[in-house]
Length: 205
Image (cartoon, rainbow, N blue to C red; front, side, top):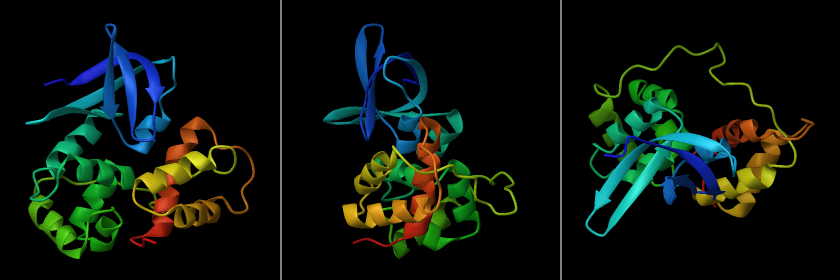
C-alpha cells in the first residue's frame, strides 16, 4: 500500500499529475480540486490509494487523508469503482457526500456523472451507517467563491472531463462568473468548479 507520495510536480493534466519521487515519475489520478492546488516545479504531498487490477496498478491522490478515506469507503458500494468514486469527490467534498447520504439527498448524488436514481438509492442504503456524520456548516451551507477571469477555461475543461458538453459547461461557468470582476487565482479554481456543478445539477447535454 502506497499511503502517500512526496516530491516535485513534473506535470499537471486535467485528470492527473506526475510527481517525481526519488527520480521516478509517478502518475497520480486526482480530482480537479486537488490538481488545482499543484504547481509544476513545486514540492507537493498527496495522500494516496493504490488500486490493483489484473492488468493495471493505478494510484489515486488526495489533498488530505479524509478525502482518501471517503474514496475508499464509497467503493464498498456494489457498482462503485475507483473512477466513479473519484467523480463523486470531484462533484462533492467529503462532508458534502456525507451530508447527501445522511440526508438521503438523491438529487445531490445524481449530480455525479454515472449515478442515476437507483445508484443513488443504493449508495444511501449501503453507506448511511458507515460513512459518518458531516461537520457543521455555515447558515448558507455554501462556501464563498471568488470568481472570474483568466482560469475559466480550466474550469470548463474540468466540467467537460466530468461528462458535460462544452456548451453546457461554458454556460454554467458564465452563470457563476456573471457580474464578478477580477482574475481567478489558482486557489479559487476549485470553488468555481463546485459552484458551477451546483448550477448544473444532474443535467447533461
